[in-house]
Length: 304
Figure 1: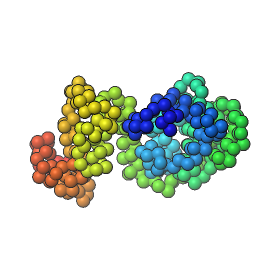
Figure 2: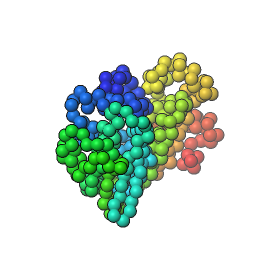
Figure 3: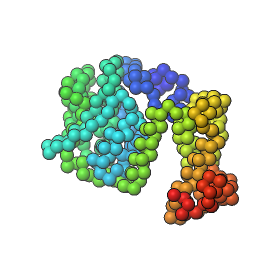
Figure 4: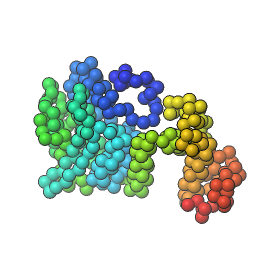
């Protein structure tokens, strides 16, 4: 994969998105090397909502298929900035259309096929139903017969737009993983992640990495761990943060206190559990840090 994208393997482990033109080029290279016009469609059929991380979970937990598709529209920048989705629903049909904003380039067609076929795969997992048909704006490639077998419904080429055509009544289906409270939380988190991905601020990027580290490990990360995640040296990270008026230690403290506040606010949350799960050595250390930052001792009432 790194060779197709023309990047070092370590770059794939860094947070952020690959440039859309680089991904488009990679699909063109893969298609040529494998001699398989439908390689993008074939690959997308292996993906599940869970495999798509935050994007997938924010869709899977939606209260209805309609709201799941609307989440996919809002959160598409988590996986691609090369285009956008739109949902149009009428009495006779509903259409999810994919419009690419980038200019024409080799591999554009296969990239469009990936986006459309991946949506079909997710829709099937959400609703248990098949779409009515799939439309592609580009002309039919050689071996077009394999497309319908892979996607599972009628596929038309040379149409006015790239679209997944649905029966409108299927928009009211409740996905088996529906969880409205969790969906609302994931929706907020996804929106925040999109803002961070689009933000040039080093402090915001560092804060995002620190937050993820604390959530995963329940301890404070060292600056070297975060610097590596941002593909820079400790010295460079310190200098970049200082140029923005920020300091690594302050960011870590704020993240840990925010996480502790979330844990204390839970119905069964305690100061001790909040302290240990948010990176503090003890409840005493946590209490001192909280009082320095907020002027009061930690409690249910002071957590908001």
